[in-house]
Image 1 (cartoon, rainbow, N blue to C red):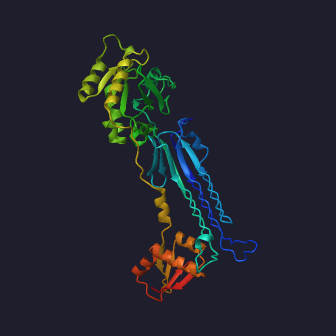
Image 2: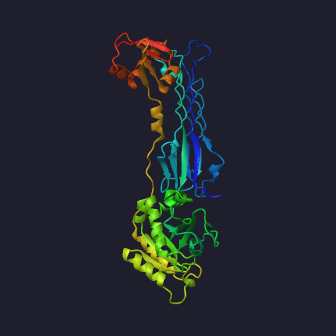
Image 3: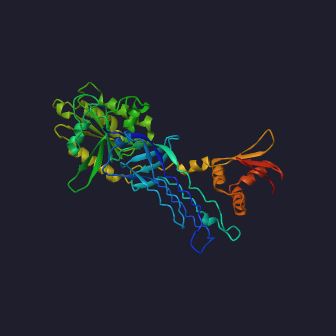
Length: 428
């Protein structure tokens, strides 16, 4: 089953906690601290796998988590780093933040491997907090928490040429004739329900990738039918081939069809209409000899606008060589590289926001109440009864801007500051 979109939850590994321990050796009754550091948690890494071309695997598994870092041990032994989790995706996959729909990474071009969620850092063991005045610290740093994020994976196929047209005009037949692709072909609408890719080879070894985009219908840009799912695959293409039924087998007007498709492209993304285009006027094998009114109308309407019309028969092969060489010439003239989307969102920015502090004044006693996940975590690993721990606590308040914010709010010497279970009087 082809799948070009998936929604998953990813979680990096938590950092291992630092260890509290002291040397206990024969003839060394008062050994110093020897608690080791915790290991870093594993990263969430996305990597391009050329053997995968859909996101179908993500339909059956939605949660992905890297390994947590190991805890530090005595004798200065560090905890083991958590294993990274590598998530394999097809080339052309865009990773978006589910909450904001902003792009985190585009797995295209040279970007074949990217760390999306770094693992938490391991905490420091108690050996790091020893000083000449505090030789036996009884606290260690906990590991940094894991990061969790819900993301949307969206596959936009990477092809040089996009083949567009209304249903049943012969796109799949043309693709099967000019490439090694084997799409479903039948005389009914929507035989193709997902993009088919094929490679057009030339005698000199050059060629290009062509994508058969499923049949568009009017209203596709508003999401009618499977409009958005189809249209997004045209965004990376450099040249567009419009294929129309020049024989009007189903009574369609080929000129009106081209205008209708261009309207849908422009409504979805105006830049799509700026791409070079050619028209493949198909099914000329069923036209009566000399009946070229439809071809003439197409040329009169579009060639004056710089869009070349190629009469072809996908069944007999007539005119296909001219079409392919015309498209190759257009591609050679285009210097721009395929579209690669810039990152718009950094998951680390959200973590920074969640770790911010807040200060409120208690209306009952006028105490300044300070809270936030980062503060709560700091209090969890700081021994305020020890002089070294209290100095560490004061430095933390200054570095985080908490003291500055308290002063802005008008705190005076002797005012009470409350942080969870801790309460103390402020003095500058």
